[in-house]
Structures are given as C-alpha cells and as structure tokens.
Length: 582
Image 1: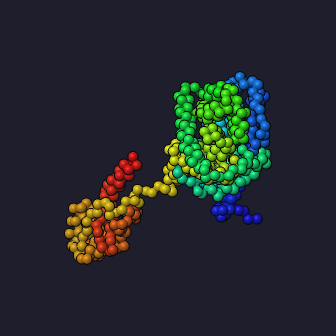
Image 2: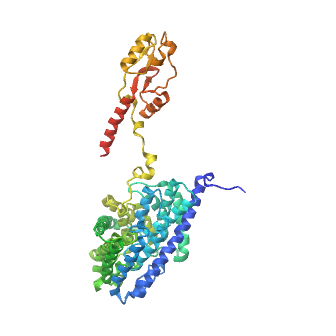
Image 3: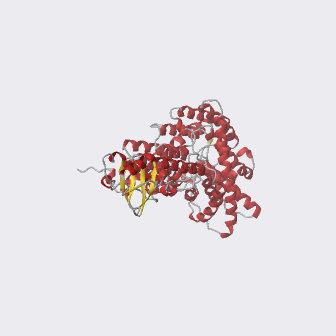
C-alpha cells in the first residue's frame, strides 16, 4: 500500500486536512473550557455563595429570571481564593497568566508557534478558577491559548515545519474564539486580522474557514447552535444613521479608556513586590467587593447583557439603584473589574468583557436617546453595534469583531450601521490596542523577516559609489604594465584596447618572463555593469578571487570598484537607512 505524505498533497488538500484537525481540537477544547468554567461556577458561586447568575438564551438561558444572592458577603473571599489558586497553578507554566489571546499572538510572531507542553492544561484550570469564582474575564482568551497550544503540540508530533506550525497557531487562534462565541465566520477572519494592527495574514483564511466551521459544529452538539443572544429582527432605517455615527464616537472613547485602564493596572500590579498568586488574590478580592454591590460585573456576564437587550433593565440589582443609573455605571465598573482581574495576573480573556462593555455602552446610549427623544426604540441594535464598534477598535480588528457581533445577535440587517459605527470608532482609537504583541504589518513581524528583509547590498547600485579608472592598454609594454600595477598596489590590472573595449586582465605574477601583454591576458574575466548592485559585485569578487572587479558598460571599460570602495559605500548607505528609521 502506498503511503501518503504531506509534501505530496496539493496546497488545498494539505490545509483542508489541517483545518479539519484544528477544528476538532477547537470544538473539543471549547467544550472543556465551557464546562470546566460552569462546574467551578456551580461549586463556588451557586453552592458556596448562593449566587444564581443569568444565562444567555443561546446557551440555554430563559427570558424569565430573578437574581438570587443568598451569601454575597462570601464573594470577596471566594474570588480571592479562586485567583490565588489560579496564581499557584500558573507557577507550573508562567505563560498561562493574564491575557491568553495576546500570548497566542506572541507565540505566532516571536516563538515560531511554540507553547509549553502542558501550558494548555494549566491555562484551562487557572482560567476556570479565575472566572468561575467571580473574576471578570472571558473564556475566549483561554480557549484561543488552549486551542493553539494543543495544535502546536500536535504539529511537533507530526514533524510539521516551523513556518506551517505558526500558521496552524493562527488558525487555532481564530477557530477557538469563533467556536466558543458561536461565530464561525468571524473566527475565520480573526485568524488573519487579529495578528496585526493594519494587515492580514491572508494565507490562513482558507484553513480557518474549515476549522471554525468544524469547531462550531462540534461545540454546538453540547451547547446548541443558536446565536448567544438569540435572534432579533431589525429593520434598517436611514433616520437612525446619525445616532449610530454618534455611538461610534462614544465607543471610540470607551475603547481608549478600556485599553488605558487595563495597561494601567498591569503596571500597578507589576510593581508590587509579591508573588503572582498574592497579586492575583488582591485583584480577586477587589473584584469580589465590587461584585457584592454590582453582581452584574462578575464572571463573563453575558446573561445580564441578554436581559438588558430584552429591555429587562428592571432586573438589574446594583445597590438597589435605579436601572438607568446602574446601566450608566456598569461600563465603567466592568472596565475596572476586568482590569483588576487580568491586570493582577488572573487567567482569562479580555474579549468577552470588551464585547459586554460595548453592549453596555450601546444600551446606555439607546436608553438616553429614548429619554431625550421621547421614543421607545429597542436597545438591541444599539447594544450589538456598541459591541462591534467598541471592541473592534480596542482589538484593532474592526472587520472580524463587527461580523462577530452580528453573528451573536442574529440580525444581518444590523451590518450597515455596524460598519458605520465601527469605522468611526476605529478612526478614533486605532493607535491603541489591548494586545502588546500585535505588530503593525506583516513586514514588522519577525515571522516574516526573511520574506520582507532585503539585504542592503542588493539595494546599492555600483554607479552610486566611487569607480576608479585604472587600466593598461593591450599594446602597452610589459614594463609599463608592471610599473602601473606596483604604483597602484595591485596584483592584477584590467586590459583594454584602443577603443576602450574591455579585453581581460593580466596578473603581475604572470609577467616575469612575458614579452608582450597580449600573450598573458586572461579573457572571460567576470565583470559587472554600472546598474549592477553590490551583492552582485561581491559575487564577482568571490569568483575571481580578487580585491577589485571591472565595471563594463556595453562592452566598454568604465573602471573598477575595489573592496575598500564597496565597504565605504555600504557604510554610507547604512547610515542613511539607520537615520531614516530612527
């Protein structure tokens, strides 16, 4: 029986198989993340603190809900304990701390797609304890890290090349996020868009489409296939366009606030001279205290977001305040809680909180608009467009996140206003990003260094450096040729005829017993042209084993360039390039 090897497959056959494999990993790992988190949440929040949190419709929740918080005074202790356990676990794989999505992007650009062998398992357990005990973080960052880590490990077992392993990590990144969000189209695009601020890794889109679809199918077997927030019917109205543009402006400002607050708390906690587990516990304690007063901010929070979108703002319970005041406060509190959780070193994602913050900003905007206009428009379009605009800008991935928000809300007619708001928000906040490891373009990625780096020698033309006019005539005497070479300190010299046509070279060592130059001329000597570059000049030098190389144009001798002139030219152009990049 014939054996089939990857190198015998066509490009599409190879990447279709890889996409299928990554999709299976994304689907199964998403199940593991989802149910591990729900298990810890059940044990610590429901059984321990007596807190019942709402569940979104797309994950089996109900439109009928009443908050229960029997022992909320235990929440600070529970959240701190979960974060502390997470910190202890992270000691076994330090890379599993904090923002899982950013660590995955870092692995693509800087680590050849490599992960710790058991980092995925540490990330799974650490994230379950962080989020399941009340930490304000998302499950998509852990899932991206786990899916990519497992895919990378399997790539090593299958002896896949480092270049293909990096691509597989990118595919797994998007497929994992798209699967656990039940947004397969957005997941495929995220694989290509999330790695850069202003570019795409276009080569991974094809396998990502397969991986995201397969992952979604597998995950849906356990959680269902409906959009997370249910299906909403929306009819586009041109009269709402100005309000959507204004919402884009507001979301851009909140995107900057989210990024700055997150990085600010990272800096604060990094300065604390305490073990990671202690720092994470401090962050968890603070989140637990806030959660006692505003339970809407703990854990993932999608259930609360779904209730708001259903116009059930009266179910909000924060400090017993009015629903409007709670809704206005929640975006700020969610930013604070998420920054405390992840900034302190807790394991989780920033994606889901970012989506929720956008939805909260959009919902508050919609409520204020209704109050000012006396209308009663649904909050759904403003919530979903807020999700797309705010986090699309904060992640520097406006296209993918926009599609994701539409998939999560189940209404394609929201796409035009989401496009408008996302563009406006991105224009405001494009200089900021939640991901340290994002690079601007493919050219800036170490992963593409060889592809885009052009050696400086190949950019310098021979005609741009000093060409020395040294030669002897074919009809010169041997004595004149020897004297010329000794005066120039040359072991050989170019020979030309009366019409300045390049004939060849003669060597000083060959003229000891020669009567005429013509009998010792070496023809067929390598030469270069004025339009040649210095890389070609070095190759000519190497082949002729000389310290200079002839420059010839249309058969006529122009001069020579020496090693010294080439080095001087290289240094001059190097200084120009360095100053232009400085």
